[in-house]
Length: 317
Image (cartoon, rainbow, N blue to C red; front, side, top):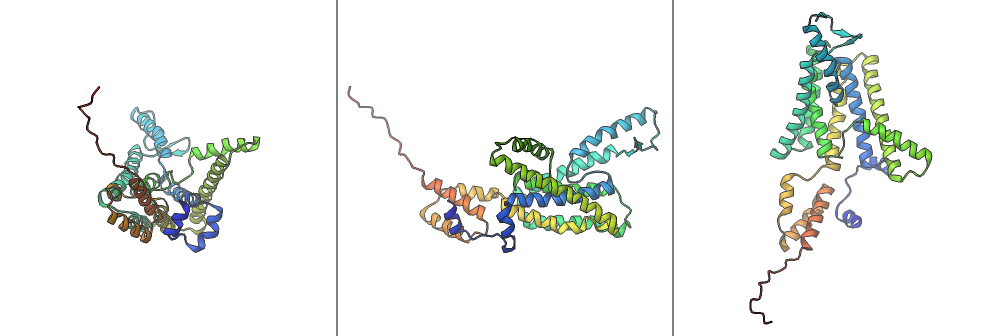
């Protein structure tokens, strides 16, 4: 299968990435890159808006203190002007709920655009880049670096789209280091230390550690860029283009065949159809599409039509 694939489909891997690919897999490289970008973005969002835009777990947990604070204020035991508990700023619960809705709306719109209109990362990635740059320009030049927390509500859909794209039409995981990765590092490290860890577990530990390191380095870099260059107002702008490139590369390397293509592949092929499929497979720029078509063609060619046999009603006993 691999020899046939390489003979029919030319490699789309950039030449300058070849040495890196020999050490890291495609998935490890792009997951580490996404982790760096998401760490950078959330570090800036924490500094500006005291919330997260790329992941929603922290926002969901912050609903507890914010709602309890509002209940305490409504009971008259604390003044609403005192918006700090234990020295920490208390977010508005309406603000948190809107971020959650906005983030979910990004994933919803991605599915609508992908399935309903056939939109791919080639058109969505530039839109995401322009959206992030527009939010940053509004903060930097219109508001004069006086940050409005409600801007986070406008940013969240972009990263909801990102998560939907990577989980459902990409490498199959969230594009940042999660608690699962941390547990994988701890559990796998114990097996490695005790001996007898299989290669698959070592690979998972290695990729999780790379994602963890990339995200931490990204968050440190984003915060340092804002702190030492005094350019908080363009902190998201400088990472927007790399972010868009990652969305595009994610779809090239890991994207699924669209629903329309799947329906086309489900149709029976004639001899002429087989010839057309073979020629299209040679010219296809996407290796994944070629492999899927090849697999479908093989399965259909092996399908044996068995004629129906009518029962013989005149059997003699």
